[in-house]
Image (cartoon, rainbow, N blue to C red; front, side, top):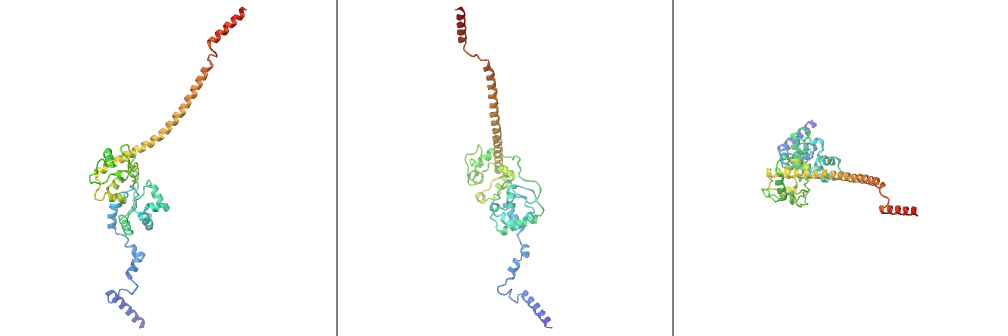
Length: 310
């Protein structure tokens, strides 16, 4: 009977607490914090896919796809299956630092994608979780193929060179590329040193990667420079063509250096062979040379004739 009464009292207490007649919890105890700290319940609330989609389409899409193949970086479909969340939370904010730490997987990604460094992302852990939640909501696995498209883009490279140098202003007033970047190109004089040299950027990123970067700059300084002053589609096309031309010139120059080295060896050994042939020819002719002057021979004959008369 006593046990039955205890059960009744306990049940009444639970009902009273749930109805709000009793305090939510004793002092020092918070049920909500306890539940939110639970790894199982917490994992059910990791990230907002809707927020993640907004972040992805403004920050990530320039270099990544979800299920459409490689671009500048890897296809991110199924990335949470391939990498742990802890690994992703270290790589995404600052991949350079993570690579420098010696992580083998981070180095492998860096090497696989033309040593293109993913720029630091000013994303909180919650926002990273939202991006991952969006990727998971899309589902599927990374598509095969893709990568840098090296086909020649449309656009006027000379016009692109003008935009790059600033001799022609961008329509919305954004700064010229040469303010921060250098370029090895006959139509470009000088260049900035604040950012990476862009001579071979087309070979690393292709037309699609360049378009993505110029359409929605992911780099903090570049993003700030073009905030409210976007580069127009026709201007991007001209810059794509210019970067393609610069990359082609650089590739041809490298090939030319190799051919010049081989050509130099050909001239060296060809010259030595020619010298040997000439020396042999001169040696053969030297054997039939006259051993003395003609006047000396005539003088000797005259002396011999005089001796005979005597």
